[in-house]
Image 1 (spheres, rainbow, N blue to C red):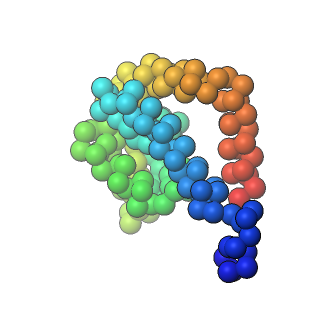
Image 2: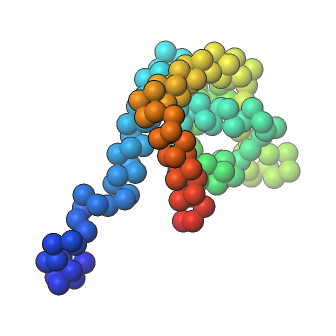
Length: 149
């Protein structure tokens, strides 16, 4: 920011930073879901991975990262404890032995089903806190912003 811009009374400040505002909101919402899912030994990020694997015969870490609009290292951090817990498996890709595929295990499918009511409760809690009108508007704004960035 230039000195001239910074001295204007209407100049943007760090408090106006949309990145920081979105991160703050994401942390608050994530905490609601993580608290609800904690009795099932999952975070909302982990549940998202497991639920996504339900619809797949196997997916690579890079492809999963792309689907979730994140990076492979973030997916790897989420996947490691899920593999240790036996909720997913990491297997060689039959089409490319250098690549690995993530697959949901039977135990993972059971855990997703068991955690579903907690996830639904978190959804309802966020809806109650924001109100359905604000929640619908937020969904629209988030989806629309994502499509434009």
